[in-house]
Image 1 (spheres, rainbow, N blue to C red):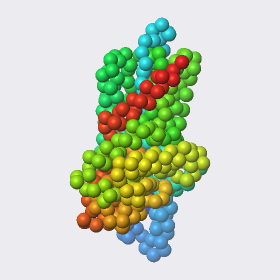
Image 2: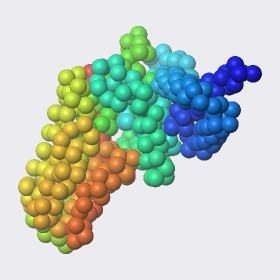
Image 3: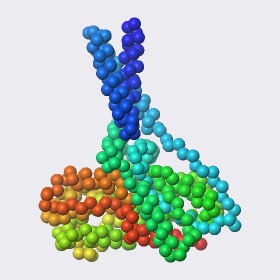
Image 4: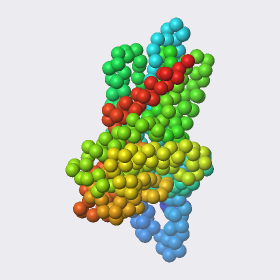
Length: 408
C-alpha cells in the first residue's frame, strides 16, 4: 500500500509537469482544459501529502513531487520544441517545354497564421539554435509561447496573410490593367501555407515557362534565404525553367515615397516642424549580423533613405527617430522619449519593416509606444505596416518588371 502511494505521487507529479507545458503552449480552445488539469493535479497532490503522510514522509514527498514535475516539464518541453509541421506537397509533374506557355509570379512574403500556432516560432528557434544564436534558454521557451498566445488573444487574430492576399490581388490587377492576361500569380509564405516550394510546384504543373519571385521583404535575410533553400531542394535545374528572385525593397525609391505620402496625409494641420516621426525597424540578434549582415545594414539604409525623403518634404531631421522593435538599440521607448523631449506635438509611428498588418504592427509596437509615457498633449498616430497601398503595389511591380527585363 505504501509503495502504491509513492508510485501515485510520482506518476501524478510527472503528469503535472506535462500538463503545465501543455497549458503554456496549447491553442486557446484547449488551454482552459489544461489549466483545469494542472489545478486538479496540484490540489490532488497537496491533499494526498497532507492526509496520507506524516513527518519526514511529507518532506520526502515534496522532493519526489519536485523531481517528478521537473521530469514531466522538461521531457514535454523538449518533445514540443522538436515538433515539426507535416506537409503533403503536390506531386511535381512538369509539362514538356512545348506546353509551357506563361510566366508565373510567386508573391513571396513572411506570413503569419491568422490564429495562434506555435509552428513558425518552433522553426525559428531551430534556426537560432543551429546558428548558435543565444536567445531564450530551451527550458523557458514554453513561457514565450504563453506570451505569444496572449498577443493573439488581445488582438483577436492576425490579418497579415489576408492583407498579403489582397496585395497579391492588387499586383495582378496592375498587370491586367496593362493588358497582360497571361501571367499567373501564386501566393507563397515563409511561415504559413502555401510555402514557396508548394507554390513553385503548382506553377510548374500549370505549365509555367519562367518563374519570378516577387520578394516582398525589406532586406536580404535569413527569411529570403530560407525561401530560396526550399525551392532549391526541389532540384529544378533538370527542367530548364528560368527563375528570378526580385531584389528586396530596401532601396526602392517608390516605396520610400509611400512613407512621405502617408505622413503628409496624417498631418491634420500640424506644422511639419512640430511633428515627430518614429521609424521602427525589426532588428535581429547580434549573432545573426555575422551570418546575415545585409539585414541590419539594409534596414538601416532603408530608414535613412526614408528620413532623407521626409526631410526633403519639410520635416525636421532631429524629429525623426530610428528605433528597433527587438534585439537592437535604441528601443522604442527610448526613441519615443527622445522625440517627446524635443517638444513635438504629434507623433507618427511607422512599423517600417512590416509589409502587412501583423501582431508586431497592431500590438507590439503600439504597446511599447503607450508604455513610453507620452504626455496627453501629444497626439500619437499609428500608421502601421505598408498594407495594400497603391504605392507599395507599384514598388513591388517595378521589382517584378526588373526581373522580366533581365531575362535572357
